[in-house]
Amino acid sequence: MGASSSTPRTVTVENDSPAGVIDISDDVVQRLKTGLPPKEGARQQQHSAPRPAGDGSGPSSYPNPMPPPPAGYGEPSLTSMQVRREKEQELRANDVYWTKRLQTLEANLHKTNQIMEKEYNDAIVDVKKRFESTAVAHQLPPCQELKAKVVECYKKNQHETLNCSADVRAFTDCVNLHRIQILKEKASVEKPAEGK
Image (cartoon, rainbow, N blue to C red; front, side, top):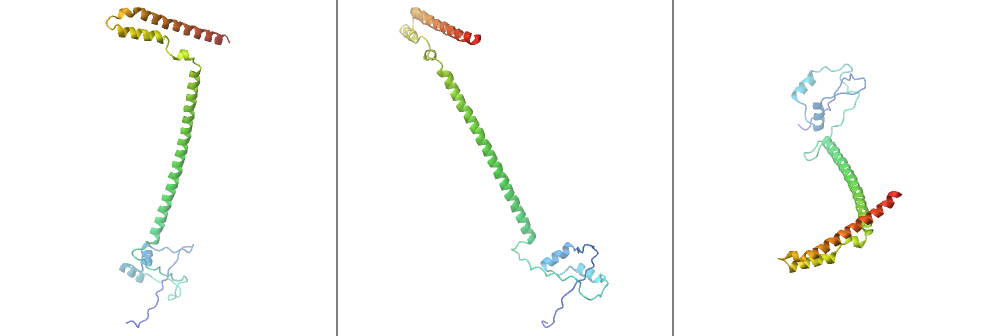
């Protein structure tokens, strides 16, 4: 049984392509990869196919390719490794894109924050300048001492408020005089500015 010697099988292929390329089916590629015997129908077609003209029994001018080593169950095939590499490259490219996009957005946010902070600080400086020019007398409400007298009188005479009419009249006159004085000051400041 084990003493018989095996002879290598040769395949002769007729090549009609002018470029010298031989087309083979997916079934043949699969059998070459896995090392499985051909299907029964393929064997019958192979036996019934006519042999090309030539010497008829000699090997073809192309050397027989070496069969690939059988792939184990745990090892991925070459195509799945290529697909995995392509997907990993796509993921890396996606990561790089989103990292750059995030950096761009952060830079824009930083610029916007700087502009808003500058505008805020400028507004604070502007408000301080406007209110520094105002005199202290204009910042406090006028006639505070007369106001205190009116409040004290109302506390003493809660049920007889007409007793405080003299204090109320003095407070009202003081406020009116203060108003007239402010209007005169504004009018004197605006007239020279208009004359220029």
